[in-house]
Image (cartoon, rainbow, N blue to C red):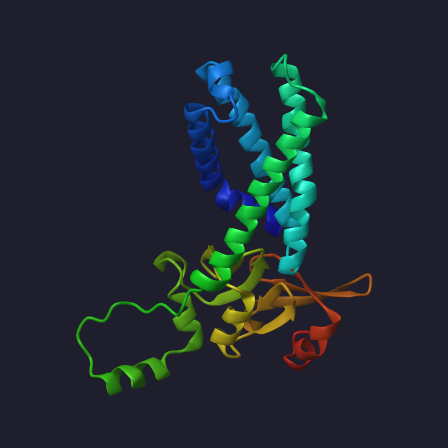
Length: 260
């Protein structure tokens, strides 16, 4: 259910990204498509390639949700092979002179190089350049350093964390969910996706809730009931999600009174 919700949330951005990539590739015509195709054909060709690439990326992220970074890097190999094979099949159908292992090998090498470089760049940016710090609302006036430090220490951890969200979605936290490089934040007024690690969010919230799974954190007030299905524990939250409780986190959930 969370995957479907995330798709709905990101649909406009994905469509914009698809149009942007398609338009750029159709206008520049890389890999000889500018010379061999007219503009409408280039739009159709690159629209299909970029669309398949985005769909495969969504599927890959869903299957690898919560996995370590190394898994995502290794997953680029089958992803690149599949994408190159689809492009190779299209080229066999469209270009009369296309064919043979040399052409496929060249296409595979280019595809793997691009997807690996993109994944490495995302990893570097996420872990070394785009680590967000606590955001605070701009003050109405200039405060003395000691006054500012005292005011910051009195801010509730949850309130300080919620300042990362749009005003209309700032409400009591319900749950957090790690989704690849992002964090899905669900409050009583909706949800928002942040570029943030679960470990950083958990540390910043300082006991306002608890981790119940490697990919899930819940606020006790946001849990409505406990389910036991086929030997597994689940917590139902205010937004209707069923959050799995892993064995390693079960004692903490019991101590918090979430599991009876």
